[in-house]
Image (cartoon, rainbow, N blue to C red):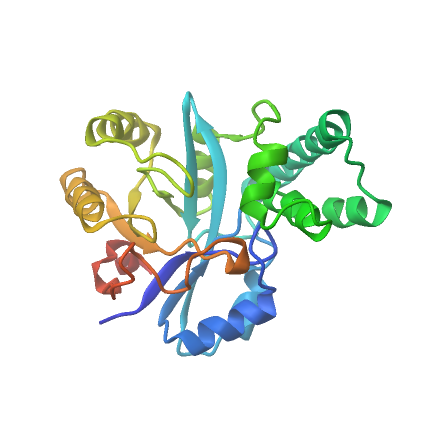
Length: 279
C-alpha cells in the first residue's frame, strides 16, 4: 500500500505548522508521496522540499481560491514550474486580493464589533504571504474573545461581506496548465464546513468544470464517506479524469489528522491516485 497525501497546508497560508515542523511531521508519518498545497502561495515549496528525506517523493502544489463563472471552487495545481512568469503574476494578484479582503475585515471588526487591532496584531496579519480568515480568528482567540478559531470566525467574521476576491477560475486553470502543471478540482462535493452537494448538483457543475479545463478530481478526502468517495472515483473514471486524494491538513487550525483521507480514518492506498502516473 502506497501512503500518499496530496493536500496539506503550512503556515505560509492558513496552516499552523511552520515549514520546518511540517517537514518533520511528514518525515515521521510514513508518507511516501506528499504535496504541499498552500492557499494562493508557493513560497514554502523550495524550503519544504529541501527538508524532506530523499525517500519521500515531493510534488509541487498550490491551492487556488477561485470563481469559475458562478461556481465557487478550489483548484489544486500540481507539478508546475514555480518560476513560470504567468504563475508568478497570478500569485501576486491573489496576494493583493487577500490584502483587500483583510482591509475590509479589519474595518468590519472595528465598525461592527468595536474591536480595534493593535499595531502588533495588524503588522503580523499584513506580514503574511497569504492571509486568510483563520489568521484573524486566531488573533481574536488570543484576545480571549472566542474559545477557538472556528467559533471566532462564525461570530465575528462570517457576516462580513468582502465581495469577490477570488481568482477567475478559467484564468487559473490556463495559468497552471501553461506552467506545465495539472489542474484538479479540490473537495468537489464541498469542503470544510460546507453542505455537501448531491449527486445531481455535483454532476451539473462537473460538466461545466470539465469544459473549463479541469483534469482531475480530489476523490479521497478527510470529510468524505465511502459512498461519496465511490461516487467521485467512478465519475472520474467515466469522465477520464485523474483521481487524487488528500487530507486537507492544517495543523491545529483544523481538526484533521495528517494521514486521514476519509471520515473513518481508514487506510487509503495511494496507488489509486492515477495522477501519480504522470510524475
